[in-house]
Image (tube, rainbow, N blue to C red; front, side, top):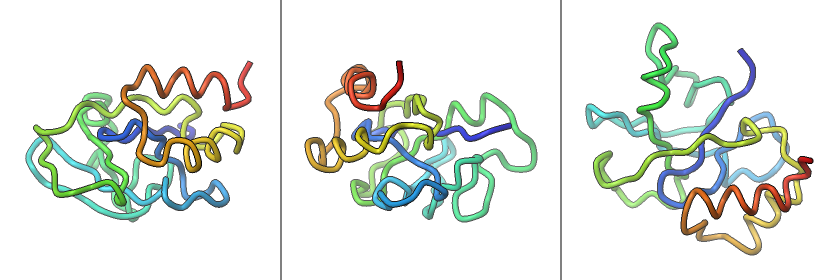
Length: 129
């Protein structure tokens, strides 16, 4: 399985893998789980936050779909039930042009109003045809 990621459930900004150079503000997350537990740390791009799988022992699509990521700098103690869904990060947290991340840092530091707005900016700046 290759890289995969989500967007922040609060800001719709991308969560990127630790292996992408720079843009550290998009790597440090809080993962929130339906049972109320959280895990904070660096996202690796393979479903692990600080080395611990968000799936537990086995990968299950339902477990991945239920996890919500919030970028640590935007997390203010919200509970799982207070947040919307984390959308799929369209470049799997790695494969976008840096122009998109620069846009997110400079023009959208507080995020996007919706996942649809994120997708529109992604199409414009991420370097994908």
